[in-house]
Image 1: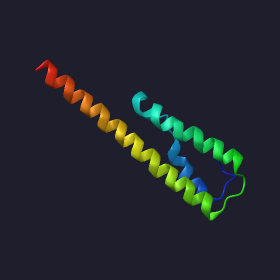
Image 2: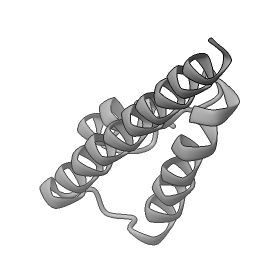
Image 3: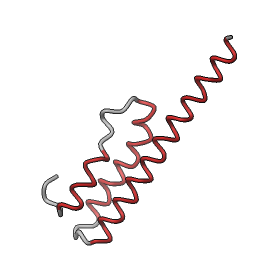
Length: 83
């Protein structure tokens, strides 16, 4: 990082998935890889690029939250069965 427009830099930093547990990182990594591909394919930072990365980040966050909810539901089902 560091060679892109500050507006792009400020968004793409949030695609890092290394800090997440494995079940969440497996979802987030797909978006991280897409972000990397897009940064390679689209060299010019325009307002549309910034907006696109913002929306991609929003989508990543939604899918990670969905994975959190799914894991919670599985845990609740296991608890119900074992009680």
